[in-house]
Image 1 (cartoon, protein in one colour):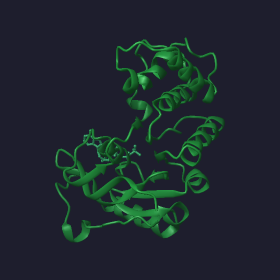
Image 2 (cartoon, rainbow, N blue to C red):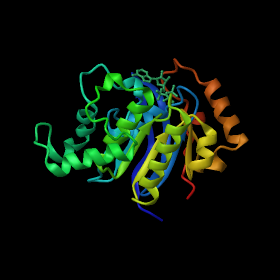
Image 3 (spheres, rainbow, N blue to C red):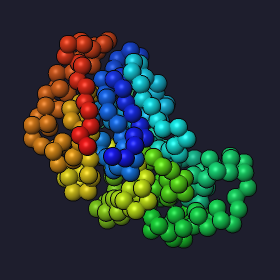
Length: 255
Ligand SMILES: Nc1ncnc2c1ncn2[C@@H]1O[C@H](COP(=O)(O)OP(=O)(O)OP(=O)(O)O)[C@@H](O)[C@H]1O
């Protein structure tokens, strides 16, 4: 079994004392490709923020392997596209951990950016202002930035929203290559369950609490989806804390 790159130990993440993900236990193994699924408000983005460290645990722990290079792509709605930048500037930001914010880019950096743009089908887009891109082109640009980051762990939050089928197919192929050929660990928030069944080996189904985690097709069976809906509908948005008797849904990953 591959070693864990991220380990959750009874992790609860909250906003102002209201838990959004609770009692998550399990591990993300090196080289895995996992879809994080669940209804709106089920805690998917919150979990991503917990792994990145933007949101500290309320209780429990989220442990990321020391020295791991991480790339995080938030939902597109959180990316400011009005910022006056060109495609090349946005992609070059991915070099920041390597060169520093004001470091000079070398020829091999410029080659890496050009190659990344080519890899996402955006040859020749270097000088385009980002506010002139379509939604799909913007998402390809953000994937190019992830490419130059050369990360060990890649976290993508709803990368397929509002992009057409061709772009989805290209981006799915890219992330499968990251995982299967390059051995990276990839965690993706996805809404399209058919896409998950077809392309993702593993899935984590959330309804604030973990409902199931393991082989994607097993996780997305009718019983688990029903359970997720029931948990979700029973959720009290204003509850300050969970009842330990009901909320202690520890979930070990099936491997
Ligand atoms: N910054 C915040 N402050 C307070 N509550 C928040 C904040 N961000 C999210 N929440 C709440 O936490 C819960 C989980 O939100 P989260 O964004 O993680 O869900 P999600 O599964 O990613 O949903 P979606 O599919 O709609 O993106 C929701 O009830 C949401 O309203």
